[in-house]
Length: 260
Image (cartoon, rainbow, N blue to C red; front, side, top):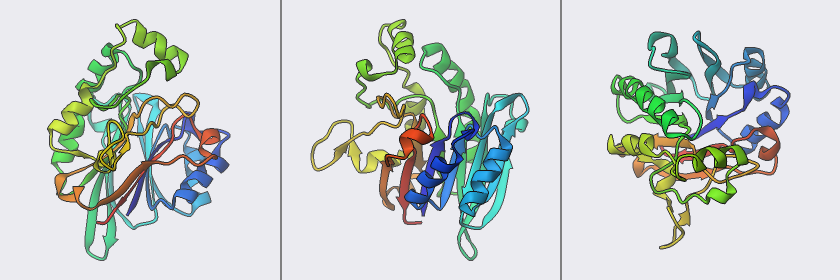
């Protein structure tokens, strides 16, 4: 299965063509999308790609929607944002059928944004809601989305950050928030990208890549996690960077190939 997570920026308004081309080029079969708050645009993107879809909005946050596109049969989808006040944006779970009678669960999410430690505290308050969703799902399963925070071992050149991010980081002693991803890893989830990459290049592995922003690619805030049972089945997990992606969004998508 080719699973992608992709923040399409502000509903994808005015960028459906490049967004559709990026997803098409990737050959993605299942796509977890963030910032799908423009429902008409979301359905236009799904129609353009000929994919089934599920839109998960948050009544308390009109711009907090996430979505799912899939070429695999969608057998169940639940939007948890209206059900759980801990979520500031959106989270859903879905079951897609990978072969007759066999389904794989996926949690899609978008956590609170920005790079300050106060923002990280908000994300940490959301994380139990994500863990509760996942706890109700059978294993193995996957978790994908824009976590808006960094891996504990990601090497980040602060000089490459976009100016407004650099200013916020400078205001907290050049410290970047990393605790959310640390807690996900502590729960036993495996960062799919880290299976074939390392914090720095060496021992035959490429270094961790960056997904944000397309103009100032200095951080990786977009993640695909798998339960340990699937770790050995992750054949690849890359930040997908075709030229078209620079014009489609401020995020590069992350694409994993998983032999489910």
